[in-house]
Image (cartoon, rainbow, N blue to C red; front, top):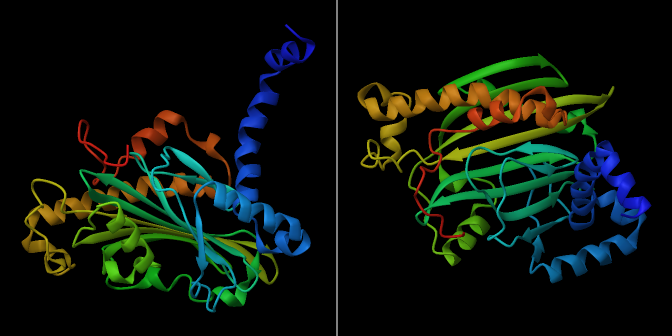
Length: 311
């Protein structure tokens, strides 16, 4: 055994550091922040070459959620890639709910490319069981650019909303609600990609959203929003409730099966939000792997033995 090999096996901390750092280094080259490509033009060329080698396609980005057109790109991802447990995201960690998730598109947005979006899908028997739209800042943004961030936390259409912190610019909340699938960011691109793969979007989607911002300076902040869209009509007891009208707040009292699904989704999100909080702080040691595995099981999670057409 060489001297290097002996050092490697005797220094597990070094190996752990490499395991943690290498994915972030790789993602920096695949999805570099705009300020890096401005400082290092060669990085933009390397990124384009990597995208072509991986079979990705770059398209112009549309307007970003922080209030203005972006100058970034929409990157079409290889949808057969399998992601589980957690992924590096915007310089932090994004924990994933139970099951296997597949990337659809990544988007770099903002006037200077400050915002990264990852969109992932979970599939069972050619039907979407879950969709994640995660949006995070890769560099701090002006506080004034994000004044409407907590509007949804106070929306009276929510099934449930919990405000954990509200001291602008520091805030954290999570909520659940019924949504119109057409209102999901980049849905035109998402729907086209799923159609190409023969994957069906359900007629009803419920959204569990976690929103968080932390002060970076007196007038800037770092922020992240994770919207998790769940399919509530993929179960035996709810498969006939295929109209959004069955899932409004007012209708739930007349639909015990729908009411039970929403109750379980609310309970799940209350447990999953702290895990997302830990990921934002890159502090996954705050919970054990067993805890995260238990908390990750949402009410629309795939059942054992049912196939994933992307496997």
